[in-house]
Amino acid sequence: MSHKNKVSFLDLGRMDSDNGFFIRGACAALESNPQPHYARRRIAVVASVIEVHGLGPVLFDTGCPENARELWPEAAWDAFPLNVYAPEHHLDAAVAKAGYGIADIKAVVMGHLHLDHAGGLEHFRGTDVPIYAHADEIRNHYYAVATKEDIGAYVPSDLDWTLNWQPVDRAELELWPGVTVRHMPGHTPGLLTMQVETQNSGHFMLTSDLYHVHEVFEQDGHQGWLQRDSSAWGRSHRWMKHLQKRYDATMLFGHDAETLEQLITQTGGTAD
View 1 (cartoon, rainbow, N blue to C red):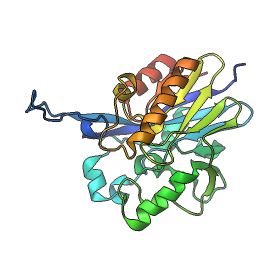
View 2 (spheres, rainbow, N blue to C red):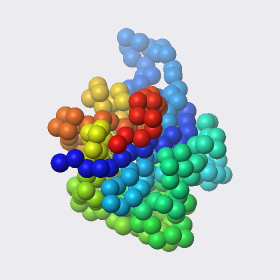
View 3 (cartoon, rainbow, N blue to C red):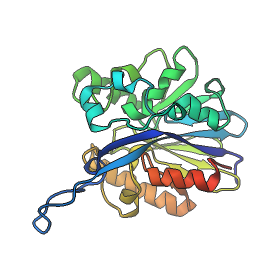
């Protein structure tokens, strides 16, 4: 059975960073290559709008806050500067390009709560729009900020208690017909991926930062410095590889600019 859902791919700007954050061993000096070529990588800030049949538009991830330069810790900006962020990359403008307004959004699903994914939650303050996130991610965000053990990746402004938080506490949950989230930790304790079934374009796997870039998925590698739990990540990776093969799913990675641009070109921005 196919579902009449649609997926629109949102381009929310570009950040530049060391490739070692995303791919284990990238640019590492070896005995056989003691002076490797050093490379920074331009990555995309990615989100999606899912038009859920019978419900309306739902957001998956929200990108950066509009005043990231002021809100983010200096060390975070130095490591991940948002160097391409024109007005069309603002969340409201990208949602409008997909054919919706922020006021149309029926729910938000957070892949995880790092600062480059949760910043757009600022648009939902003062609303009753449900914000779905894994319970472990909500807890970890508070702990990371309160203890200052992981402040930088998480920032206090993104965990606003006035938002309508809806914790997910299962390994797998079909939130709406043809839209399933799965708990796939490793990058963060509470990372969620989303599978969307469409009527004409098959299945899409929205990975958030289970994979930042395509090489890690395709080459069965490991994340770089941003990986928090290698064993958990390995289990999540094996599960995702199985699911992708089972459903012949199209992948959208958390920050892969090449994949995002290809999908937008191939679909005109929306797959139905």
